[in-house]
Length: 362
Image (cartoon, rainbow, N blue to C red):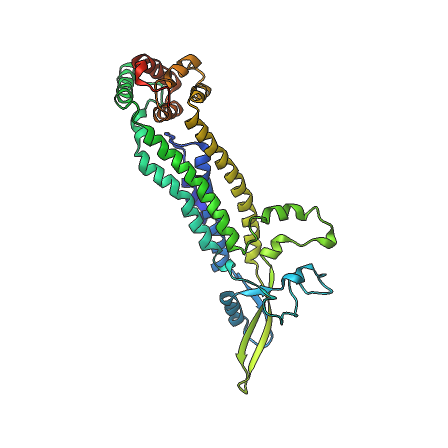
């Protein structure tokens, strides 16, 4: 298992240059690694172990196992409320299924490993789009100035290059910032769409899955219906038809145990909580970006909060002379550069930018 999941460690390698925020990385890196790990674990259990084992008299078990796995199994939804051991053999298992539509069929467990893989790809897509759009601009601007130790002459030359670039490209970085903000919005859209599709995938049961699991322990023992067993049943039924010796059709009713659903139910309860947390964080992040764009005065406070060594007056003066794109570039430089070098660059930049060059941050 370690060898199987060891390759995911590459997602968490330390990066010298940061071009995004922590919540953005939580969506693109951690969530992608989480979904990929779940997909690998379920794939190993599904194709290496025995995902289904059926009990049937008079037929080879391997034949019935294969048939029930590929054709789907079912339970009786109203049987989940009956007493196990007296009224029904297992939760959701009963024999009064003669009425059409009385059964609930389960086919999605065959596709879980593939769905998780495509979810991981969807979560990684905003990162790829942003890296293509960013095109290593931040790494080029930093030029090794993230390390404060070095020759003074070389550092001064690099600072002059950075200042020259910022002056020559003043008010030309709005598209750079808006593309990044757009990728953050894409993350939120991706999570919302995935929640909706997972809810459709599980027949409308997923969105309330976590809430029902939390309420499950608070209910009286006689009123309990385990939501994990309802969505991921551990014992189901399967009907196998075959021709008898006289040519008549014989119906074989079998009980099928699905050990794979033990893994599925724990996987999706964790995914439910993580996606709800991530959707909340991304919603707050997108609203935060809207505030940054709509209210320029707040940008100076954010810059000062991230770099306390720069006086708030200097931050206000600078933010009044640059647009949101320039402000975002400077904020990212402060994240990546040595603090002393960055403070010197900001001080020089404030002096060089004329007042009329800015538009009040609008």
